[in-house]
Length: 80
Image 1 (spheres, rainbow, N blue to C red):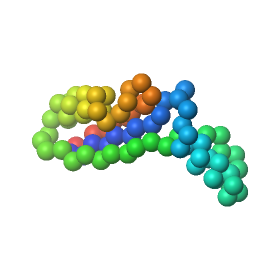
Image 2: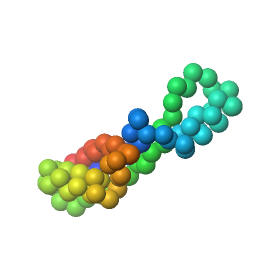
Image 3: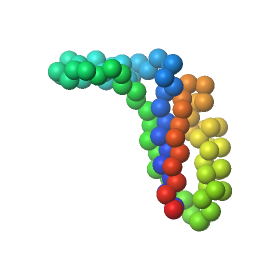
Image 4: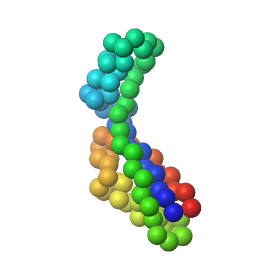
């Protein structure tokens, strides 16, 4: 199995890296960009076939270690 985790800053949290990317894109002539949010993307290869057990374990890992739940949200997807 393969798991994909996307971690992004919460909408209410200032994202200086995203603002820098937005400003750079505007300077390059790209207009109409309302906001940019820079995050992390992880792919995790898993042994086994129990999708629900993997989901529970990875939700715990994402909440406790991979993301900062105070300032970040995450989305978990598991592909059997």
